[in-house]
Length: 247
Image 1 (cartoon, rainbow, N blue to C red):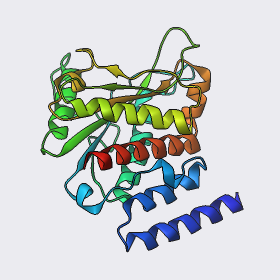
Image 2 (spheres, rainbow, N blue to C red; image 1 turned 90 degrees about the vertical axis):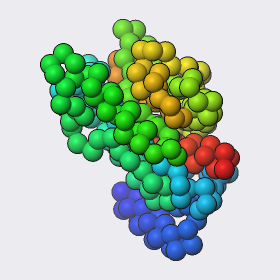
Image 3 (cartoon, helix red, strand yellow; image 1 turned 60 degrees about the vertical axis):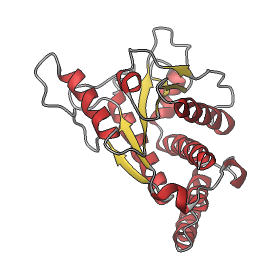
Image 4 (cartoon, rainbow, N blue to C red; image 1 turned 135 degrees about the horizontal axis):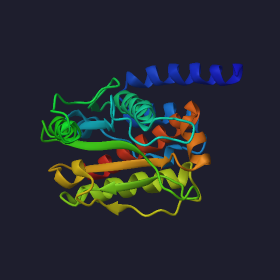
């Protein structure tokens, strides 16, 4: 533990030092390397300051408030894991120089809708927040569940309305496979009308199902704060790579 804390302290000092030189990619690498050794400088294509100044990334922690989302066998609520990972991703991207917006930072629904219509109103509000600027991209964070407990692994869905959405989805899926889920063979999928925010988005948008709460191994990992940070590093690295290659 002492060695780990010492490593984190050194990483933070390096991060602050590199901030002076606006090396966004190096900052992200320092953060990620502290939590997962397989993330190397080659994993990241560093974002230039010109490419990130105007880019806004909207991170959407799914569910919240009375809408708990999926529930694990031990009572773990999806909404809580969504927020934890979304906040990690947001912090890492902010350190890398991006402007980041979280659709929610507390355990709330984003609606004053009438009973029976709150869920739809909540989804509309998330989309409204995401689309309030032209340079936005939307990254929605969720957890999966399936009757067959053997089903496991992260999977990314993308909006068909913007071609760049598919590139973002593939970048996240591949980076997670390369770094922390080496046996993950799940393909990315085009969202259907069942995923409201992706089906209706006019901006590049993806939804990351981070794992299955119905799978004991996935559930255990997703509850672990260290794994949450590893996963957040992989997601952040993928987004920076993809956005940098676009600029």
